[in-house]
Image 1 (cartoon, rainbow over the protein chains, first blue to last red):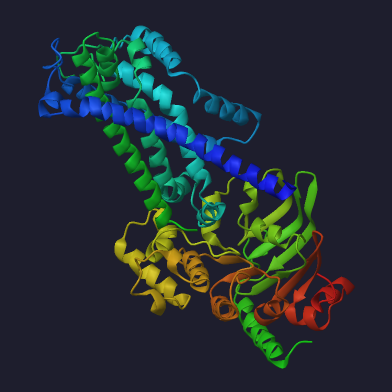
Image 2: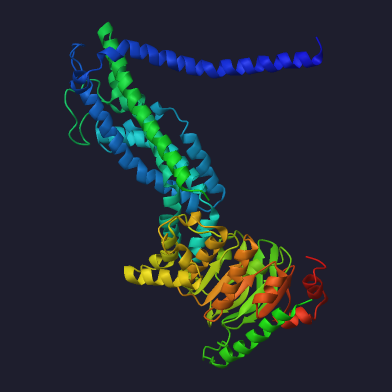
Length: 285
Length: 283
């Protein structure tokens, strides 16, 4: 066997390994989703979606948990959007580029990698105990906001960075102040990217159970939350609760709830992808 | 070296120029207000690097002044001194005095926003905002807080007519400006500057990214505009400087080597380096 044939075999071998590695993740995901659908799809009906939780598996529904998830999503958006975007704008447009801003930058990137349960502990201490919000929607949403703020800040900065300097120069040269330039030029041009980042961050928050369990979200909530101070449950916690029951019927319920949660996440990611592509089409420098 | 036609144009300019300056009066501010722009003993540094060395210049109103010189000679830096666009560069430091229509622009009392309404700028690469044609021209008025729709409409139309773009875009005012051709975009950028009625227009190689036909249009435009505005232009194009400017200043390595009437600089340069540069022997 000469060298050329040997190299050809190596080439083929590597490409086969590559395909295999790529497929592992996809196959596992497909198997998981398939399994869940087989298990839970039959359980999904209108009663399941609008039903209150119950000790009897066949009567139990996800209504309170789903509405709790919607509440958490809305509150988390309201809290994290203005803070995250402002912080991103400040770091990118106002902060002097020096050692301090570099330190801040590195730390914010690091924060994005901190395990979510740590945020849960922080939220428990600060929001639940010190600020006295109790096991409320507000405390839970604030905790999730902490969790996703680094993601929003990084996304905001990246989108702002993509706006060419020539646009800022043009605006300044017209006599605009820094804030006018940001308000009329930088933000409109980068808003698609910022929005995409926020939706992706929120779709991560939607799936979180650990930090909410720590701040005291309930597994069994027989009522729909009526205010930000209400006690609450969310879908991941409902799923977690059902899976830990011994009866098989609850496992079916969990699978059905996972399908609903997956649909919500996919829809959010879909919207993010749509916005990104629309934004890229709209603005070509 | 210089063709007859260009020489004629330069002569014409000079006649008109003397007429204009005769009408100007000297104020009592201690500054000679005959000049639109005055720079005295100007030194500019970027960190350790000295970009401009002891530059003195007076620029008359309603004239076109061209800055020429090889890349890195400081001509763009000098241009950006007049609307303080260098302020954003790290390590920028300036010594000396700069007056625009009698006001010291590096004084603490000066508001950058006001200065830039008086001193507009057109950049090398056309840089319209990613907005509609209308909004591009209206931007300067909007940021000044002008709300009167009728006034804005009128001003947008007038500015677009001044740059001879109105007929081309009047049916598409709400189309994205980025859809225009490069030459149209650059004329739009000039219209955007005119809309706030500046006194001075700075142009930083405004035609270097354009084709010859668009370049010609911009040059004609500059010729028209100097009836109402003082224009300072940086150019790499020797012929362009000769065609459109009344005064020319030659910069080399941060020094202002020679300045004067364009005709004199081109026909009878006093400095050897100026002559070499103009005749294309270096640069």
